[in-house]
Length: 344
Ligand code: ADP
Ligand code: MG
Image 1 (cartoon, rainbow, N blue to C red):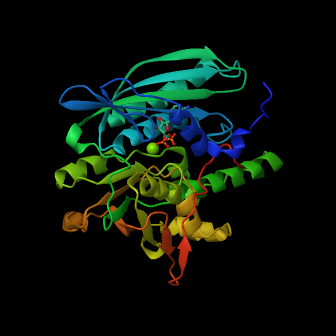
Image 2 (image 1 turned 135 degrees about the vertical axis):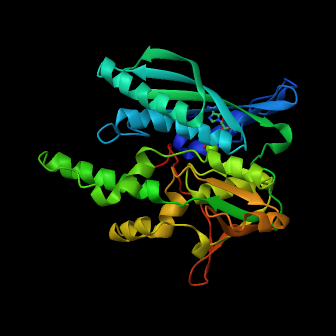
């Protein structure tokens, strides 16, 4: 044991996952995709089973000072369903595991499950199992989602080709600004408990943080329009980080146009109020749970009139040249500063 202790923070979250996956061998013929995408892909005949897990930890992913337990339950399901959507699949079942400290009452658990049930009803999925244990440090929720897709419809992070068009759904950065507002109101409350939170004009932003939706409708729309995306990922860590995942896995480079990145007007104005560059919220904010995907040029016609899909750039063949053309016409490198739990 003479080896010097190495800190996880030196690797970061993605470096750590790479290190783990580098030492994992796949032996089952039915394992079509292991670590490294939004979900694992398992061969079950003419269709494939999709499996993904996401864990939410109190104090890291949520703060119960402003996160109602119903919303937390809903969100913890939605973020998992989002990973199945990112494979172009349909979620069907979840298992829910919780660790609770004695701080939590029966009513608290009821509220959490109320949200979980609401999400199950909305996404049309069944809660089929889980695990319950105690915790010394607050609440932990780990959800595993099972989904399904036709094998030829499954969309990996690795399929983008040079000249493919980069698309993103909805708008970006709102969840991050919503979090800034919640943090601000929490500070106000801690200083003067008589102050009521002032969230009235910020419902959209706060809602995007507290109760995000998985974009299951986009999977449906793509099928309806006859579009097979060439690569796809969901935006959990921020646009920059996810673009780099697609580029790295597909061995292409990204050319992104700042003026095409969809940022809602309220997000924009509030970011400016907070002295944050709005594009930074979109690039590095995270938790938007929109879908980021690429399509081949020939599918452009089919998607160009979709009201909720934005064409924001394209892929090119120069690997490691991931750039954004700013509104002023400058060329800046895209770097990922999204949620990296092991780096501050
Ligand atoms: P996402 O943001 O889509 O949830 P992550 O970045 O969390 O994806 O994970 C990337 C990949 O690494 C996924 O395939 C996930 O299953 C895998 N992964 C993450 N943590 C671990 C771990 N501790 N052991 C094995 N695989 C992991
Ligand atoms: Mg994902």
